[in-house]
Amino acid sequence: MSRLAILSAGGDCPGINAVIRAVAKTADQRGWEVVGFRNGYRGAVENDFLMLGPEETAGLLPRGGTVLGTDNRYDPSDFPVEEDGRVVRRDLSQQVADNLQRLDVQGLIAIGGDGTMAVTRKLIEKVGLKAICVPKTIDNDLPSTDQTFGFDTAVRTATDALDKLHTTAESHHRVMVLELMGRYAGWIALYTGLSGGADVILIPEIRWDPDVVARKILERRARGRLFSVVVVAEGTLTPEGERVVQRRVPDSHEQIRLGGIGQLVGELIEEKTGIETRVTILGHIQRGGSPSPYDRMLATRLGVAAGELALEGRYGNLVALRQGTIQAVPLDQVETGIRTVRPDGPEVEAARAIGICFGDR
Image (cartoon, rainbow, N blue to C red; front, side, top):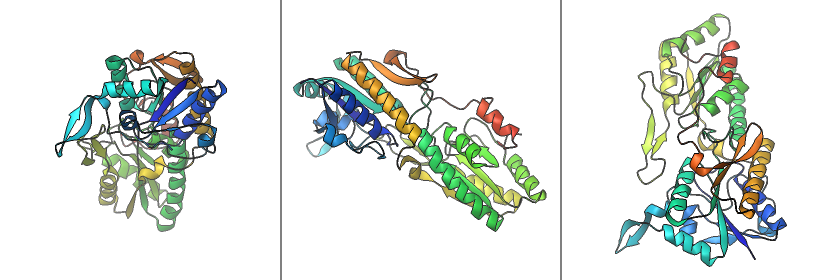
């Protein structure tokens, strides 16, 4: 029987299981089997897998996370191996190809973000891997697709948190600052701020002045609005133009871990306004939970498209949402870097039109 393989790598997000389910069901309709590698490319190197038949994929659609597990620290071309009591790095790319051949796997579907796509492209070049990529990230910052699954769920989670902060802010006449994920792009913060009625939104793409933010809050107070709600993206620069780094992880694909800008924003607001200010860092709650209906739909469409491409032997592509349709984009044509918020984009302009402050004027 013909087989496909699938893995999930990088950060988890709601909707990965829906992709896995869609690929497995699409393959099953054609009489193919699906092998799932555990923990990203680590499983492909170590041949750690499970079969993904109808029994294994039943009930996956509403489940968050990924039943295969995930990891962003394992690149087969630079794989950590213990030798003589110490860890050395070896190029085990060929081992991945050999494992796939032994399992009679015709091609691999890799679910992941920019790091996973980079690793997959290397394996295509090094060992001729037959692969298709499915883009995912809650950050919505991949330039290859109009939207990634997981983003909608993350915004819903963050908006729910913002709604709850509104009530306590109003009760105590405080300023509430909510720090959200997003890496170096402000999509989650922007959509949450718009959806949740924030008074101030601070994002990496727009430089901000604490005096402007303080003036906005004091103007609200003068009009009888004794509380304010501020949303800040984790990658937002300080007024001096620097990133706030929580810690560094040398052996990770994403070595810089952002976090802490919310506390700085809160301290500056309290210092300049004299208003009691509280800070909430939502953290990994944004990654968890059951995917929204939209994310289930998008993930299913991407999974079906990836499965069909693989069954047709059309490897070397990324499946992406573009202008409402799922399209196959050659991996060698996929843009690198991140897709950021346009400071003059429609979402920012809409926010400005209803009086939301971005700290820049």
